[in-house]
Length: 358
Image 1: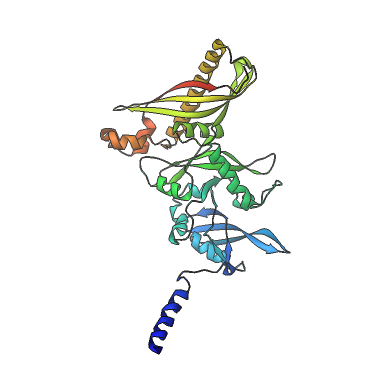
Image 2: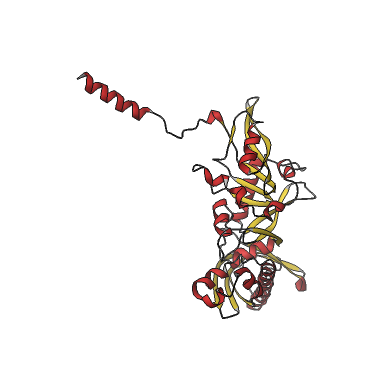
């Protein structure tokens, strides 16, 4: 009987043991924001994290240097009271200069630990990284709150798509499509970081070419990856007015020939703002629709022109070419083939809602 009781106690003791990889929060500092700059083999990383001082939560930052992001974190650990932990990382900021190099090794650290998040947002910043951790303007919230909410807004309003760490790494190593990441600058007037467009990548490197904010929305529409809102404003100089529309639905049709691409789009839109308020008249609706079709085509053509200049197939034409047009795909490096392809764009607009009382 004693032997049986002893065996039972031993078995129960095993169930009471902790997890093999358990980590106590009291031993860690959770990092929601990291900024990486420098060049391959000489990385500087900045970390923003919460601290509890004087009975309230405040945010501090630490900086480290090393031959890799992991080494830079180890260096930063020497300046903090607990080890810096990436398990709840929300945003990765990367300098434009580093993004122009082969920066994939700089992100390797985030994939090495199984419990790390790979759904963190990524963005490219212009200029000194320290400025983005301590902006000259007066911000309404700490940077650790500001950037996640800013980039969630970018997604919600279709200024960009597919720029989490996981999506970015998958796209970078897909030869049939290229990456576009939100591009941030410090607003000269307010001193607050602002998303001004999208940075275009060719394979694993930032090309130095960016789309404007309106072109970024247009590229998301062209890729048919719009989110809850896809609002865009056009200046109608001939009528001395402007029109703001929201794209509700996109239907795209790509026809790929032996050496050309024809891309047509049917857009269902709602009119959000239009001062004349005369869309109850059929003739006026037809006039506005014609203007919108021309304006959308100009924006779409601008996206094609810039992406070809950058040898950056951000729309993913290459995926369809690889799957169904092997002759065109096998002509050589797809990014260079894409840059020289004649691409014709056609846009048809259907005005579904005017949001104007008739």
